[in-house]
Length: 190
Image (cartoon, rainbow, N blue to C red):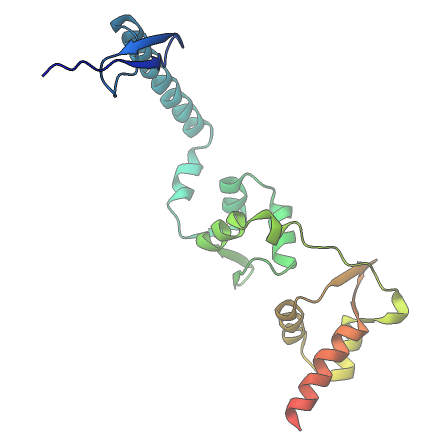
């Protein structure tokens, strides 16, 4: 089955222009085709060697990749971040954990989901200006004034997306935000 078509193409190996007789031709000659094949083979061997070296450097990494639940050390090894960074993510409430005595366990799918969030949502949140100490409650003041447990308060702050401000060793929340939530709650009860 011969064809009379002539197509101007660019060789994928040497980048020179040539005339192809089929629409699938990629290389200008057998020589370029052979060289491209050898380059692909060489690159695959290099990639495999690098992968084997990485496995040898981090033998626990391969075992960790198959687990569904990770402790803090395993998560830091797998994602290449420090333990302290993971604890900061947990303290901000952006990652769910389970505690078994003193052991902290994280689901692998939660870690994957956290790191797959687009930057607009996870990192580029607009930063609100600190309104000042006189216009804020401390967490303890909110608990005493409205009679709410610490866990419920943190869940409510997280659910409504209220900004928390750390000043020294205290966490502050804007009075207007808390008053709006608890006034709305009191109106629902009535």
